[in-house]
Structure formats: C-alpha cells, structure tokens
Image (cartoon, rainbow, N blue to C red; front, top):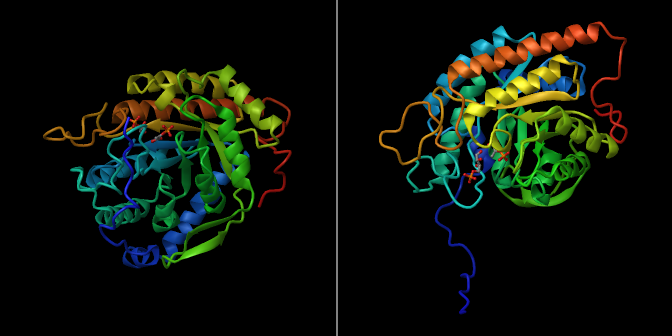
Length: 370
Ligand SMILES: O=C[C@H](O)[C@H](O)COP(=O)(O)O
Ligand SMILES: C=C(OP(=O)(O)O)C(=O)O
C-alpha cells in the first residue's frame, strides 16, 4: 500500500481579526457585563444548591439562521420570566458543532451553509448574534469546540459545555479551567462518565498552557482553575438518564471528592437522537426531582421553533427547523418546561417536609470554593 504524505502544513487562506478587534466592533457594555456576571452567579447558586431552582439549558442544537435564533430567544425569554420561580432557563446559542466524522461545523465555520467556510464572516455574524441574544436578557449557553475561538465569544457566555467528543482533551480541560463561567462536562460518546468526572477534576485546578492573548499574540497562559464545573449525562450507546444511572454517576463524583451534582441531557444518546423521545426523558427526570433528588441540578433540552430536523442542503430550508440534530418544536418545549417547573415545586414541598440535609454536592475535595 503506498503512503500519501501530508503537505508540510496548512496553507493560509485569510487572516482573522484578533479577539480584541472583534470585541471592539461588537462590544459588551457595562450594563450587559453586569447582567452576565449576575447570570453566572445565579447559575453557580443553583449548582451549589443554595438556590433550589433547576437549571434548564434549552434551545436549538445549532443556530444556522440568526433571525430564527432571535425569534426563538424572544419566545423563550417570556417563558423564562413566567417560570422563573422554579427554573433558571439558559438559552442554547451553539455556533460550533463537533462532528463524529465530517459535516457542517456550525455558523462560526460555515456561516452561509454552502461549504465556503468563511470563518471571518462566521466570527462577525456569530458575535453579533450573541450580543443581540444577550440583549434579550437570557443567560447564554455555548459549547466551546475550537479553543482558539473562545476569547472571541466567552465574555458573552454564562454557561459553557465541553462536549462528548472533546471532554478527554487536555486543551479543552485547560480552557475550562480558565473560563469565567460554570462548565458542563459531557460523558463521552461511548458512555464513559468517569472521563467527564476527570474533566471536572482537571478543570478545577490551575494550569499553565500555550494560547493566544486577546491581542492575538501566542503566549504562555496561566489559568486559575474553575470550581464551577459539573458532569452532564448525555447517554452513549444506551441512555443514562434513569434514577439508577443518576445515582451511579453521583457515586462516582462523591468517590472522586467532587461535588455530587449533575445535569442530564434529554437529547443525544439519551434520546437515541430521536427528538420525540425527549419528553419521555423529561418525564422520567421530573419523577426523580419530585421524589426529592437534589443531585440533579440541571436538565438540557434540544428545542427550536419547528419540530425535527432537515438536511442542510434542503431547498428551501424550513424556517426555525434544526439542520443538525432533531429538536422538540415549540409546543412540546413549553410542555417540557411546565413539567420540570411542576417537579421542582414538588421537590421543594418534599424537602420542606424533611429535616435539613446537606445541600447537593458538598464537595470533600473541593470544599470552600470561591
Ligand atoms: O449535537 C449535534 C451532533 O450530535 C454532533 O454535532 C455530532 O453530530 P454527528 O454525529 O452527526 O457528526
Ligand atoms: C454536540 C452536542 O452534544 P454531545 O457533545 O453530547 O454530543 C450538543 O449538545 O450539541
């Protein structure tokens, strides 16, 4: 078999603006900065159990059309206000997609959905979208896939994910250790929860690593360590949302001296990528919450204006329908959020009837967080 040698390196197609240059074009004002800081603190309070609401990260699998994304965000902001006593709702604004092999890598990489892969335009469009979405008052969730993109966007994000395909990657764990917001670490696509727990551990401590400054210079960076990380159960070849799987994941965390708290993703491996199964997962989680489970601090739901998914090259594209994984439509999303809010109220009533117990996730190894 003859070997094909790779060329010496990539050819440079175009320069990128520096993070500082892009931030100057789409700035975050002092009022918005203060609001994002408040969102991050509120999420930490739910993770720590000092706020007994449920964190719900909900929204499209990916944003491919910023108008539809903002349309969805406006509707969700109304529901978030309505259910705000029980749910802390965070909007998924995912602009990068990790691929199992190949496929559309998200708006940041291919903003025109035509394989022209104009990253400069993607970064501009993406940051402008996050600024507009943040203006609507909701906290924003984002999966950091390419660590180099993080400084372009991180100031707008209130909750971050490290995905199933990157959770064991040292650069992603280092990035998480430097991020100024809580980070959810997904179990791997093979269903390995320990790798996610290890990522929580790795991100909690300080690291020294190579990266780019806001001015775009290669530099030695020091992270402080991020103690606001947690595991996200997203299933694998088989689901892991049921009470037994949740208890076993909490035991892994407890044994590792990590806060015994986690989020469950109703989509991906937990729905077998069939969006119609998400309500079944949500119903099971609601039952666990109603029964008093306090280690379950968050739920993720993939949802958009229209139900299901479509191929990215469909003509015409249906408005508000995912071009990546299938999503719940709006009505089913509203039902899922009402179900979770009702379950939180039941959990509150159940815990009011009991003597005080330790809050979710008093960490042995990470006690006394900031
Ligand atoms: O969340 C979206 C997808 O599950 C993820 O990007 C992987 O997709 P793929 O397996 O179709 O590449
Ligand atoms: C890619 C995602 O999830 P996972 O990493 O669990 O596949 C996602 O949430 O969009």
